[in-house]
Amino acid sequence: MTTGTSESAHAASFNPVTSLISTTNLTHAYGDVRALDDVTLEVPAGRIGLVGANGAGKTTLIRNLLGMLRPESGQMEVLGRPVSRESLEIRSLVGYMPEGNCLPLDQTAADFVGYAAELAGLPTDAARRRSSEILFLVGLHEERFRFLGDFSTGMFQRVKLAQAIVHDPEVAFLDEPASGLDPEGREHMLELIRRLGDFGISVVFSSHILTDIEETCDWVVMLDGGRIIRSGPIEDLGIAESLIVEVLGDAEPAARWMIERGATVKVTGATLDVRTSGQDAFTLVRDALVATNVGVRRLGQSAVTLEEAFIREAEAEDRDG
Amino acid sequence: MADLPAEAVIVDRGYRHFEGTRKGRRGAMGAVVRDGLRRVLGLRRKGRRKILPWTLITMMLISVAVLSALHYAANQVGVTDLVADELPHAREYFEFISRVALLFIAFATPELLVPDREQGVLAVYLSRPLRTIDYLAAKAMALGILFMAFLLIPQTVFHLLLGVFSPDGFTTYMLDSLDVLWQVPAASLVYFLGFASVALIIATLIPRVGFAAGIFLGVMIMFNGLAEFFVEVADFAGSEYGTLIAFESHPHLVRDWIFGVTSNDYALTRAGLEPWMALAAIIAISVLAVALAWNRYRRLS
Image (tube, rainbow over all chains, first blue to last red):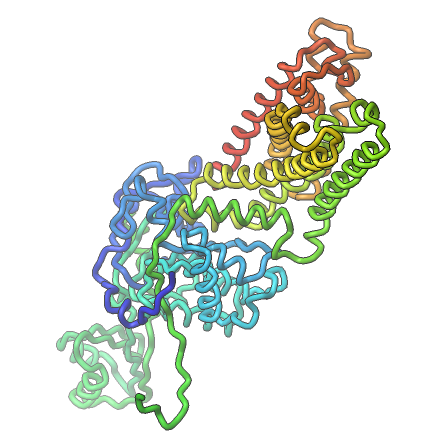
């Protein structure tokens, strides 16, 4: 039965340090094509972004973790349980939002989401009640008795999310949840995903749209050609703001002054790209300009995006072979 | 009484966690069975989805009413020979309801399997505590429950009414016809296996409900005609076994065997084949259908 446990009480038991997913030398092949190649991964609970181009192996990884596909080799654990032996128990505790269509067009949203809850083992009464609550949460309370065949793409995606979380999973695997949505629908979907973390539900969110991950997740796993090229907290990926300073005259003395004080400075003509660690970049630039007696023409901020970080990591992976 | 705030406050409903017991695999299978029953009967679906199943159910109920009325009328005017020899009883009633049951299975089997597969819903099922074989078993269970109810409920009502209308009295009639109590369920099971196995093979392979139903009916009718070729025209060694393609006739032949009746109405009997061969063919096709469905769904998942 559904009980009135408060959101904050559950959120308090949500331990971001606990290992959510663990894989060791995981390999999966479709014929001669290796979709996952020796993937070793340790991911904590929280909002996890799974980043990669189309065909990078994101969906294959998720389906392996759910026990829907059998790997060629390797070990996997989800929520501390081995997938090879406890896939059914794991599936009771996780939700899955597939990328493609997965909704029966001849059922109402309320019926299907309730049915999805029953499929996860919830009793019929609780399933109906939670169906209503979750459809309210995703903004479809008014439309819950409409047939899914009459829904728009945005509503479809929200029902897909609702069926993935209706049984109160510990983790929801969302495969390209914002795919096909207009900007407003996408923002709403990302907001819902952010809220899941607040409810104590971990999210593994796959996307090839890196800004979505950047806005939503606190841990990112980068996949390229079936290999993990990076897995870690998003703040460790060098996604940071830098200062762009255009000076009057020679930029070299100011650059040297800042480099001597621990900053990373890239000089292009009269323009300096300044990044600092631990010190205030504006203060450093001001002091450098005063010390070297250089005038400033323009000063502004520039963000290094997850996209740039991904390209940087992928290029490094290619170089390393 | 606690103090109330002076101003109204809109409170977010937030999120409530589920803290009850999860039923796991058995609960998931039960959910698939219940959904299967609703899907075939068109319950919680648009009105047009209810037309075909409820038309067939109505036909069954009307047939019970008409036949019972005939028995009642014949008994009232005292033509007991007519009642005993000419009016249908349990075995003969199968002649009619098996035709309606054929139509029922033609639409119900693909309706249970095809939309899940073609609309991608299988991905949701298989992310739940449910194996491929559990899913197929639950669907088969739903079809079996509906089919057996479709045959057994009219037969039961008919049998009870014959007892009520019997000039010998209800109890005497029931005691005199105890064999019916195993013959009718056994024959119904044979019909289920005979029809559902062929329908399952077709529904596993064809991506549209309407096409699958049409192809099933076509196979059942046309192969009966083709079987006649092996009786009337073909004259080579072993040609009589060609009559085994008359899939629609197999359950009728086994039903007659169960009721202890010999009939020459079927191509198989005219070709000299024994009823047990029809039963063996039904079992073989059932095993083939399960293996094919399991293999296909295993690949899909």
